[in-house]
Length: 265
Image (tube, rainbow, N blue to C red; front, side, top):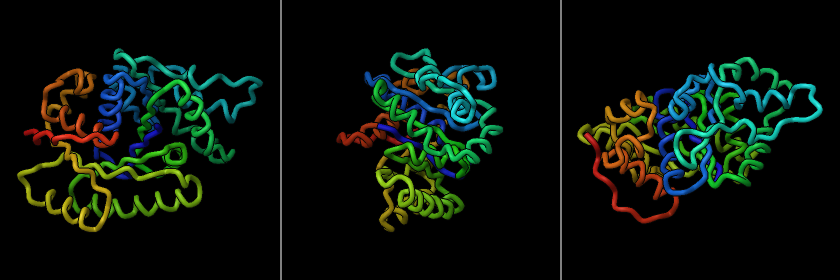
């Protein structure tokens, strides 16, 4: 399964959700790949412990060969890096993505990522794609390449207005480029259960018929500690309530029945 995590708004937890779901997938025995398409490289740094600027053989290198004059292109799996965790791999980001974008657009290479990920799907059980907070060439490429889309939602009114625009953009892209793409759900992230506004917004979105998932991911300092230590929650704090919420989210996405974990403080 190829799953993209996307929202045009920054700071909503795309990288955290991508990496922690992927880490759970790997911990459950699935050979899992994270593709980091954000030039900031947060997922890359989180899982490999190195800034994207220090790495070679990145997703930018893989895409650049599609516009270069080379006789033999390297296979997509040659740009995959192992993480310290069993079954978990990363195709890292690079700052070069910013400079490469115009070339790829000019050469109409928007389907090349889908071709590469289909090939990688022969050796990986699950592929998670992290995206930049923008509907740019790479995000469109990811939405065209993916089969499922998760939308993180930060519970405020600005995010709500942006959400409608995101769903419209995805609908247009489904019609023109990827009719198989399914919006798997909206993930309420950094949720504060004692505040009335988050509960109100989630309730209203649900009443509107939007696919809000039943799992709420709490606002917790534990996530910041996870970023700092470069360890996904399943490895750093396996019994923490937020870790259990991520496990519940993973189970819901895979059609498993769960008794939802309590919200973390």
